[in-house]
Every structure is written in structure tokens, then in C-alpha cells.
Image 1: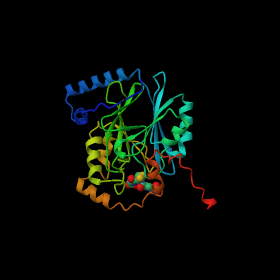
Image 2: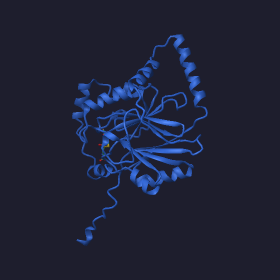
Image 3: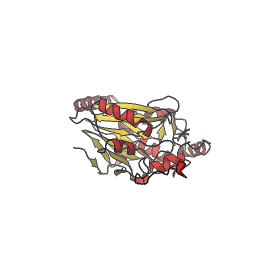
Image 4: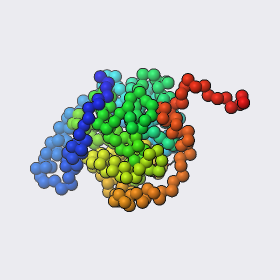
Length: 297
Ligand SMILES: N[C@@H](CCC(=O)N[C@@H](CSS)C(=O)NCC(=O)O)C(=O)O
């Protein structure tokens, strides 16, 4: 059954449990317990299978992620942060692999490119688009912290990570012995590899971003894989542990972080004036409004 649960999880409890399990100094009893847990995990996950692909759009250096439960008879799949320009490539791949695309999901309202979620819906009308309620933008389904997005027997958990924009969320693969290990966090622009999203527009706040990353991402197990929405230097994946140790912005205290963010001096994204209004409506302007033909004036 395909469903979105709106069950609220006590995320702080989950995080506490996870970080306890990651304590670096382990006594022998603890080690034994950890190995047992790992063995139990792989046993429970044995019958499940995650298909995972990281796809790239070069003009905006955006990563789109394809996830599917290929052990399920329907092979239900979802795309995270598809880009309009690469929708045909992504849908061809979905078809080639025999997957059934059910969700097209955004981590936030992007400012540098147009989302592919609306375009996907015109090509595969059964697909439901998803974005956070806090983004105040249009989609079929609006999610918030604690929601679970199920695809087959696998699921993503939603964590609110505002700061780059007000409505940013991070999607994390399920916490459970029957879910993929290590966990995977799709951080959008909240946490980039050795960086983070800028905080100078769309309701951005360096204070909020610092708190979001520390409380919602750095509280995940250290081996959790970090998959961001962009990389500008060719990196593809990191881990929570690596970013906690080496991220040049987020390893600083909050005051220093704010000062770094205030002094980035980045030019606005080239597409911002087109991308933001378009992404507020799923990447499609109102289709009932006919485009103005400038040549007829
Ligand atoms: N040059 C690009 C935009 C680059 C940019 O501003 N990236 C954003 C994420 S997309 S809104 C960002 O947060 N960057 C953080 C950083 O430290 O680079 C363009 O014109 O599109």
C-alpha cells in the first residue's frame, strides 16, 4: 500500500538513541551488542531492496535522486529534486528500469533552477508532487516534520531543516532494521558537502540553519550518508561524521557561523526571478493562462 503517514515521531528521542549508539569509545559488552544489532539489521533488510541512483543536472549543478523498492512487486519509485531540463532523461531511466514512479518530491522552493515536479505530472499524471507545508507552495501533498513517505516497504522520514529557506526539509531513509543501512539523508541546500546553503533570501536565517543542521542532521548516526541538492566541486556524497569534523562553516560556533554567512558575498542565482515564482507552483505557471506572444504586439 502506498501511503503518507502523518504520525508525529519524537525526533529528539530518535536522535538521542542514534547518537548514543555512535559513542566512539565502546566497552566490550557494548561492542557485542552493536555487532548483534548489525547482524539483526542485515537479516531484517535481506528481503528488501533499495535501488538508488544519483543523477546530475550540469547547468545548476543539481543532484536529483531516484529511489525505488525493487523487492516490491510494483517497484514503486520516487524522485527527489528533479530539474525541468532533465525530466525526460529521468523518466526514461524510470521506464527502462521497470519502476513505477509515484512521487516527485522537492526539498524546498529552489531559486536557481525550475523544478521538474510539475512537468513530470503532465507526462505521468498519476505521480503526486510533494513539498513542505512551510514552503507555502503548490503541490499535491504537503509534508511536515515527523511525516513518513512510504514507497513499497521502504520509507523516508521528514525532518524540518529551515535556514536556507523557511520551508526546507531533509528526507532521511527509515530508522529500522528492515530499512537501508547506513541511513541516507537528502539534505537539499541545508547541508552541502563541506558547505551549506546561503541564507540571504527566501526567509533565510543563519541562526535557523545552524540550529537545523546541528539538531536534525548532526544528531543522526555518524555513518549516515549525506546526499545534498548541489555540489559545485565534483563531490558526490559525504557522511554526518565527516561533516561534523570537516565542514568549514558548521564546525564553528554559531557566532562565527553567522559571520561567515554574512560575508559570503555571493551574487544572486542567475535564474532567481524565474525560478522562485515558477517553483511556488510546482515549476509550472498556471496552464490555464495563455502565454503572451510578444511578437504580436
Ligand atoms: N551560481 C549559481 C548559484 C550558486 C548559489 O547561490 N547556490 C546556492 C544554492 S542554489 S539557491 C547556495 O546556497 N550556495 C552556497 C554556497 O556557498 O555556494 C547560479 O547562478 O545559479
